[in-house]
Image (cartoon, rainbow, N blue to C red; front, top):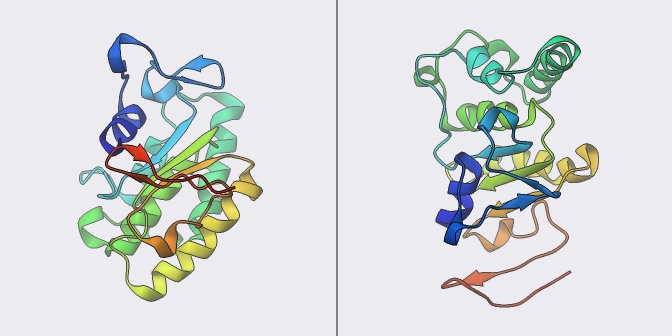
Length: 177
């Protein structure tokens, strides 16, 4: 399940030969045209790009007013998540928490229709985990988007959700709304 979830966020995927649909539109589109923000557990930052370059990568393919809005959103998110001063640094110069915030900003900069989070707090120290948890709890209501969270930590299970679907060995254990 987790592998399929991750693959669907990364690349066109046809499980069993059938396309995956989100909001009546297929997601078998080039990544730049999908309205899906994805944050990987391992950050997936480009080591040869600066923080700003990694954030701007999320805006590729946009033009005109859409791109201008994305640039303003990027600046605001970098300030909100406290990494504006890291703009010219490379990923190798960042802590794990800083890398995770860059990855989250890159996923949000296009204002996605859905945000997929794969263990977003797993590698963070306690203080930063609490800070980022608070930020993530505000996202669904503030951005008016659903957030799908994959986690192994029961303390994160209500992080950004109102509906909980625990899965064990590929099967649903229970539903909670």
